Length: 291
Length: 337
Ligand SMILES: Nc1ncnc2c1ncn2[C@@H]1O[C@H](COP(=O)(O)OP(=O)(O)OP(=O)(O)O)[C@@H](O)[C@H]1O
Ligand SMILES: [Mg+2]
Image (cartoon, rainbow over all chains, first blue to last red; front, side, top):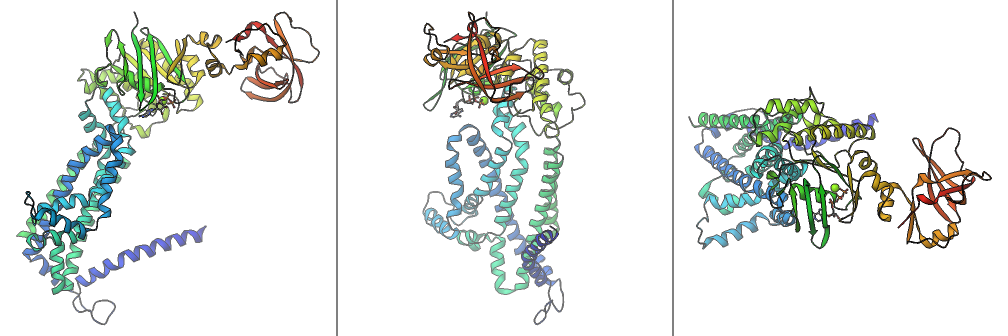
């Protein structure tokens, strides 16, 4: 029994090490001065970070990536949430179709998708080829599976159909029912899907590079460009955006955990205040960086 | 003047007829039960009354008003679901107050407080559904449905998820509240005992049809066909030609004969006390004995026919397995169907 437990612990430990080593390596490299023949760096320096944080291009790229993420994830929530709700609750016959559609992106490699999109839109009446808008469209599709699964599972878990039935019998309209008894109960599920999507899009390179490339330099394109000049600098970039994602994940996880422990009526308010706080922090960070 | 009228309602799913031309009328304040096996259409009928399913034909009237095409929120019916469907993001108070808030009623606080009192949940106002026991959740669901003062209360197997003891006490409580408010109630169950103890009137359903309606006593003592006989009282049912052979009589009419297990009497071999004008006497052997509380349930075999006999559990008077006995069957207790 005891040996089994320590075996499990060892296994988890190994996994953690396996996952952390590349990160630690990257981090060390980002603060390393001279690092040639030793296991650990011979000297440490912050100059890569200083150089990075003094680079206008970095902040511009960061902002562009944030813009893309906020737009596509926001669009996805605004469109997919009502769609999935309406289909699971009222048109359950079509659920399979939606499910199949939502899984399609897995089957299409980004390169193929990008080439197809370029061909399709290069002579199209909708002049979005080469603009960030085509990228937002593509990203919308990329994160579709996550958003779909997350939202649908949350709806299933709370048995949304029956909650709506109950609310309607108590005098609520369909919209009121959604707002008061469905949405508050799936918000944590949506947050988790959102988080996954954000993390995924932060590191998206193939589509961005092919669809807009240098015309709308995202973080990953900036990173790829820097790769040729300095490995230390790219490590600093990676560590920076990892930290941002980590921060985001931490807050959201903490939030959902709290909700589970005490699903108080203040839940909605807490989410809102959290979101407000986040945006304030972001603004703060950006202002601080710009000055 | 009937208060609830269900007039020739038919409902189909794809090509399967789930409700077949159902007509039911109820008086105000009546406690009616839909009783039937799983899948016979009880929930579908209830949901049709609530407006959660559209019917393909027929009309539904409550208090003289045709509600067939109204949305659920306009129908003034309350419903308790089998799984309660409490709102997980709201505490007990807010769950119960929900309907009043939606209807923008005044005095929400005092109305909810009164309801909480009635279902005996004082002190639990701040609890969330997941912090309540099954029985307590069920009370919240009931209070939530009742507080908006619906004209009809619909209950879809509200007690089936609870254990036997709580179930018994909630049956009583439900009945008390129903009487107190004099609210017309349609209750769904597949438990015949529950239907018997609670209802003013029982509608026995089978495959989308109402096969018999009547008071519990009527249904129990005079089932109209073998389906009801089997379902309601564990009746012993025999084909007539086999039964004729068993009792050696040729003048019996009908297709089938049914008799309840408790009308049969078992006597030791050799004891002669029963009048053979009014009873049939058969020889048999005890195949099995089981005890369900105060009832002894025998499985008895006689000339290759086997049937159930129920007897009150008198101390020390148990026939053991394999004992040869006489079976006394009163002629007037046999139903010829
Ligand atoms: N949405 C649906 N689509 C197709 N068939 C359905 C649907 N809902 C119910 N049915 C069918 O209608 C029949 C009656 O179902 P219903 O739920 O009314 O049964 P029930 O009497 O309430 O059974 P139970 O005691 O198990 O709850 C069943 O045969 C079921 O398969
Ligand atoms: Mg049912």
